Structure formats: structure tokens, C-alpha cells
Image (cartoon, rainbow, N blue to C red):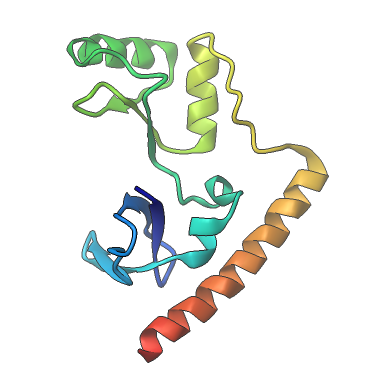
Length: 144
């Protein structure tokens, strides 16, 4: 099933949700706010940089559900507290949280989204373009 990104008008809520092809709604309610289908973030190769994936859960860094309490205690002791879902997947609040958690556990975080001025410039340009596309998409949705 495809993954779609939904974002509130004030950009304070953004999340991914799966829907079968042809069954995606234009807007859904989350946390008491209406969130609209975010075309730009859904189709952006860099959407992880703009908050659409945070918080997120990791299967790869997860544990067996019976080990969640032990893992949470270990995370706290290492200085990188984290929570886990009922399936044992660790919840990362942000890219920096994920990176610190991985480093504390001796893991290499391969999903680096770039560093340095060129990457920052590319991120800023992609973000500006995405914001423009979001605003146009929201205007079209509200007009209907």
C-alpha cells in the first residue's frame, strides 16, 4: 500500500499513513486538527528532512516486546531515553535523537541526510519549493 503524508495548515502536525490506491482521503483528523494530503511531502525524495517522518519507529533498532522495559532502562542509562511501541520498535523523536541513540548503542547511522553548506542549501531550496507546492495544494482543496 502506498504511503501518504498529511500535514496541518499551520504545519504543527505532519504524519504518514497507508491507504490502498484510490482510497486516500483529501483530509483526515489527527489530534483534533484537520490534516490535508501533502502532495509535495508525499512525493519528495527528501521528505525526512522536513519533519514528515518524525517521530518514527524503527524495526531495525527494535527489540522483542518482552525486552522493552530492559531496553528503556538501558537507553536511560546511556543518556538517550527512548520509548517503544507494543511491537518493540524504538521511537525516534528526531534525526538527532536517532543519531545519538545509534551512536550510544554502537550502531552506525547510515541514513545521514547530508552535512555541510551544500546540503543545507539544497535542503532549504527543497523546503521552500515544498512549502509553495503545499500552499497551492491546500488552496485547491479548500476551494473544493
